[in-house]
Amino acid sequence: SNAVTASSQSNPGGAVKLTVPTLTGTDTEDGTYNGTSLTNTVKITSLAVGGTLYYNNVLVTLNQVISNYDPSKLTVDPNNGITSLSFTYSHVDANSALSTPATVTMPFSNTPPTTSDITNASVASNQATAVAISDPIGADVDGTVVSYKITTLASSGTLYKSDGTTPVLLNEVLTVAEANGLTFKPVGNSNATVTFKLAAIDNQGAEDATPATFEIPIT
Image (cartoon, rainbow, N blue to C red; front, side, top):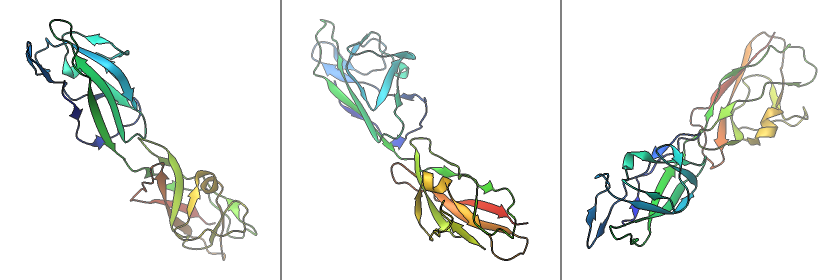
């Protein structure tokens, strides 16, 4: 059996199944296992580390023997956030002998998170103290959002942490809990819309390259 390393691809996240590369090999008696003849027999000698294998949409079990192997039916659902998964397999020849197990490796690139634009509820211009604002919204298809970066400060007024007295700094990275606790205090009495920008960061350190705009109408 031949070892296989697939081309790197994005981890789709969720319950999306990807087709496993075709399993091939050779045998001194059987000849070439091209994987496409639909006559080969393969045995899954170890389950996927970093994902879940399926054959014909049915969960694959350890040491499962697949007769008349069809490469289009062997799929894997990679775990969210993983950068590589692997499993091993063997071919079974006409005499029921097993080949030395070979490893299938499927590497994945990280997909950066996204951040949604938000329009907060109106805030009165004469606020004496900082008021709570809406939680930011970030999403990550192949992992989790673990923090937010403040890429521009408020165009007017001041952003504070949850205590209402600690100002947020430009390019400061906040945990999700800190970002959910942001407060804001307007300055002056003019009616306007205050904006700032922030970007989600995922559990692999990737940052949204297109920060979201957070709007706060002042009345």
